[in-house]
Image (cartoon, rainbow, N blue to C red):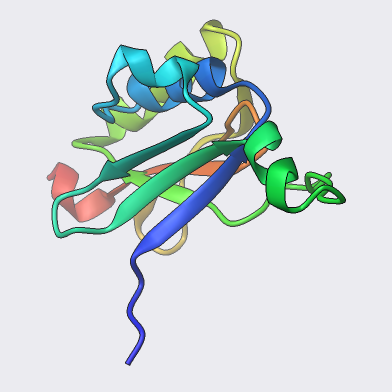
Length: 131
């Protein structure tokens, strides 16, 4: 039976994309900024990989990046205040805020960013955790 193992993100600028994900707490070595393919293994074994357009075009020359947001990554924060502060800090650094923090009807403090390549990135925490 197949199991989820890796999520791939296609990037226009590796260094810019990795800088965004480092700000979200991902441990990615600085030398990875110069690579065409980068993988990070998360606790539990799931991997996230970034590939430059040049790498993708090496085997799929007709590939065109999507013009609308694609699948999202969601980052669990420690508190509603962290959702808010991280969102506004990233916006202040020039990243695109897609939806400002709000108390979602499903019981979470939630915010949505767009990474440098237009992928949705959710920041959230269950509201009951904040008690």
